[in-house]
Image (cartoon, rainbow, N blue to C red; front, side, top):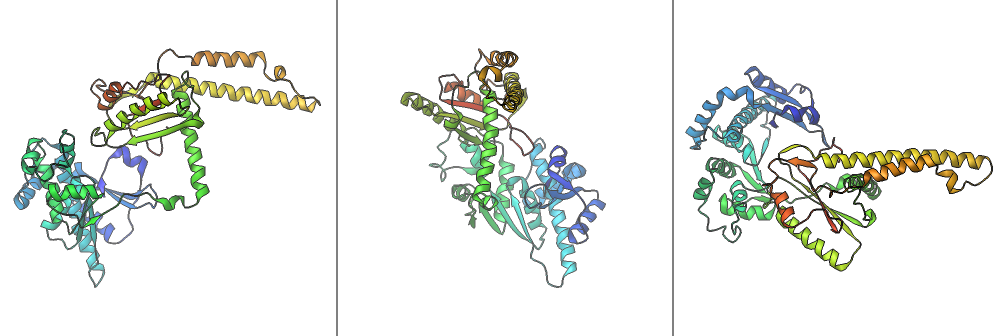
Amino acid sequence: MGTYKKQFARTEIEEFEFSEGPLYDAVTKLRDNGFKIHTGSWLVEGNPLVLLFDISSVSYNLSKYKQELFGKSGIRLPDNDTESNDCVLFGFMVAQFIADFNHFANKEVEISPKIVCHFHEWLSGNGLIMIRLWNINVSTVFTTNANLLGRYLCAGSIDFYNSLDKFDIDAEAGKRQIYHRYCIERAATHQAHIFTTVPDITGIEAEHLLKRKPDIITPNGLNVKKFSALHEFQNLHAVNKEKIHDFVRGHFHGYHDFDLDRTLYFFIAGRYECSNKGADLFIEGLARLNHMIKESGSDKTVVAFLIFPTRTNSYNVESLRRQAIAKSLRDTVHVVQQDIGKRMYDACLSGKLPDSEELLSKDDLVKLKRCVFASHRSSLPPITTHNVVDDHADPVLYNLRRCQLFNNRSDRVKVIFHPEFLSSYQEI
């Protein structure tokens, strides 16, 4: 279950109506009451069923919902916090759906079914709170990857882990104007039947900041079964690495004096919380690594990708131009290869071995020279693929400048800041 966002749903969701049963009945009842709900399946492995709630369809009830939340829990939300207001609308829609689903599910069987509702992060917390306040007979699980107040404290250059037991929690949340959000997260934590975190360090934070020790620590992990056959994994790795090679060839053309077979690719990605996600330390480490490789005289090169979504105006024109020139060279070489192959075939048919002058014509040389001369660049390869809004204040770009990572020819560590997440339907 989630909120409906048209721009994402049209590429990630296959919409269809549920077949008859408790799910269908609950959705139908809510639609009859004016709720807009989209149903279907998520286009990921396993194709799980999804319900997407259009919160705009109940926005006229916002004041009523907030009043009920305050009256029953004491949590008061300010009017100017759009994200918290959306959290309330979504929470009430989810809670009402679960109430109706529970009702219809119990009508179908003699023994009450065991229903477990899993809520993830504080934005879903209001749904869990209302389920418990309405005494709906379902089990609840609440999971957090990083508690809200902890994120704000870490971003404030505080000796966080050595001060966990010393914080005045209410005061700290109030100073950062997130007290109401903190209250939703803490209420959901304590109202849940089972509280889980990912990973152990978050559990320690939760024990001090949310005042509840997690019942279960859920480990991070990868779906290794997807690549159970070693050859399948190796083939996919080779295909994807070649795609990255092509991008790097274009991005660094004119300065491409390093061997891709002797190149390592590093990646860091996540929410744009430069300090919390360790991007500043990552860049500092790259600068030190750059110095060490140059001093050692190693022939290895490192290309580091930093992928953090932030506001941009457009693609970087220089980055696009470099990719276009590289593609033109690749296409020209492909045409020349075909011509050489035809000449080689004709020569062999006549019973003689072709020499190099016969294979590569003057026209071919002219075409190749044009592409080579066009690829000569006086400017350095860009460190970002997009034009970032307020780039002078951008934390990643600031740290790259501070550490003087500018993709100079002499640098053995090259950097590319890509300020948006990659999706399955995008080309790198």
